[in-house]
Image (tube, rainbow, N blue to C red; front, side, top):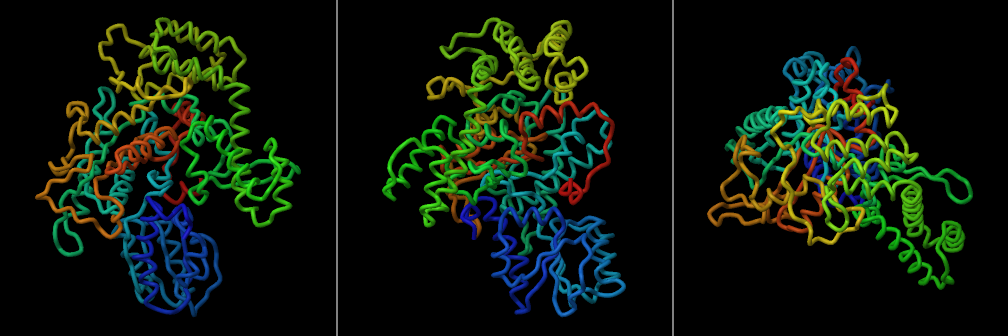
Length: 593
């Protein structure tokens, strides 16, 4: 198995697939074909490699929607979403003539009766197995999952949306499959907001669907709540974190460099196009991704020097061209050096962007976000902090980000002031970048009578060591720490359903309560905190889950959302809320988008 998939969510998902789909296949010695839809293709490629499938006697992987030649002597495994489109494609494989000897059918989630009956009607004699394996989420990283649905943002927050309830229902179903895969039956809480109810609605849906799912387990017993909590919160709860320029490696790279589908494209010194996938198979990426760019820039050349020293290379300034020379001379070191070369190049790209533009921006952004300067002196007039940014020739997106941070810092501004700012940034035709935040419940125009202060009270982190340009901490990190310490205010975080009274994020479990770890759960002795953000999560919030888990040890924090945000993608989504309704996506159509 791939090294990065040996732990965390990807490991659990692959184990679940092996225990269900692969275990059934092992019962016969025949080589088989695996047929996937776009969603399950993405799911499988996130947690295993073709060699893993080959070792399990799966010889060919095919696309459910493409025309395929019949192979009558082989059995086919269908792993697909329970949608009409998938079921129609499946039926077409066996009617009027069968393409395969037999079919083993596995659905990612509950299959509606009408679809199941259609399959039975036309293909009953070919179906050997038909199971629902409860896995309609995407394991993104060891402690991060998504529902692979960026379109959910518009469906939930656009005033013109026609499928908000259906989208929330689908997200709830996907969250239930996450809990089932983790073998958890969590207590559910949500962040109460004055002007939006999406978190409350989703919490009710999830809790109700969890109760139905766990009504009877395989042994015929009703499953009780486990040592886990699920917190549901909306994107408007912290508008600052996804807008700031972040200086930790992963967040910075995805913000400043054009990385599509986790693929970083770059030119080598000889001018050839290269690309590298940034995922957990690259252990150097795992080691560096949450570190500050200053540390990354320092560490990679050191690592390269260690390699060159071990091969008695003359020390000198480490540059990309030097590395290219070394690689030609030392084939045995090629893999190690390739890994480090990629990150040396990516870190260089990040630092170049930083010194060209971002460095000066960061100081103003941090002062506006934190509300005080490096010395802890309160920012009395945020406009004085903002003006230099607006006067400098930064990009329009960067200026919009600064204006938003200014508005967030004041908890909204006047109509007149906003009009002036919009003119200053020259976005009269695109004012939705700013105005549409109101759809997320974030105050943009201040009503004179507004008595509610939306700003959450923050943890005191004045004693923590930080870089001057990285003083802001995502609000979700406060929430994670409060939840782990059992300090969340029940008025702000009502219980949709409570987990056992013994739950304590620090890992203390009541002596009377037997907490037997399941087979897939042997690595932990404490509890799990699952956080779901409606409307997307940022890379800095993902980092927070790892930081809190690392600090607490006995409580694993898992964070997820419909999708992962970058500052630019979020701004584009915000602007897009003004557009007319879109056709609702199905799971597999989303994967194609």
